[in-house]
Image (cartoon, rainbow, N blue to C red; front, side):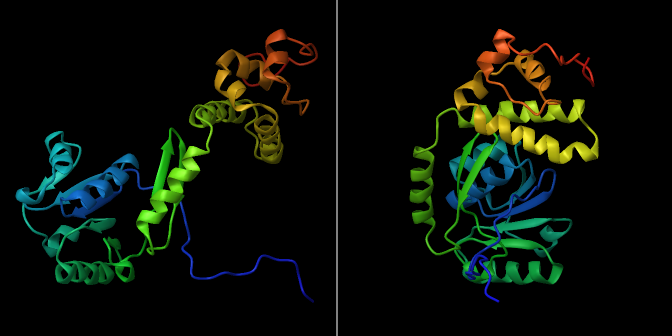
Length: 250
């Protein structure tokens, strides 16, 4: 029987938040494209090694090297550079050399991105908007990087200015909630309660929320209520439950 399920579109990429903290990333090249790749993986707390002749470094990459933000090898790529590497990014003006690096990566099962050669990429770099913990990526699946940048700017222009700060406060509240209600069986209730807070509070109130407000608000978790910031600060309705500052209520 026909079902009202989403249609499969196909032709897309699986967009994921790839956690590469402390992973070893090799960047081959030192020009403008390499500079962007390097910043992307440094922002994700990766351990980065750059292989490129010094004369091929642009100002930004040279700065990263001088500041010891990356490890640096002053020469062209050699196959041994792939030893103990988790990811490879190439950005060199040599299609033949790039293809050779791609083939070596495939032999070693290393995820690789060959700049401007979509068929030789295990993953693509999208255009990313960053505001604190918030990251929004727009991908054209290798069809139009510049257009991805234009779309990303339009999206970013419509976001509230304080969305990043609001997300940081929500993260703090969520971590505190897990401490006072750590049981596994509390999971669905925690999620439902946090959703209620996010849906009922304005972004301005989330940004304005202080730690003492969070502790007061947590007192309403057993009731399944999420009163406004104004009510929290007035103390209205906080008689039945009170958070004692540790792992319970009295």
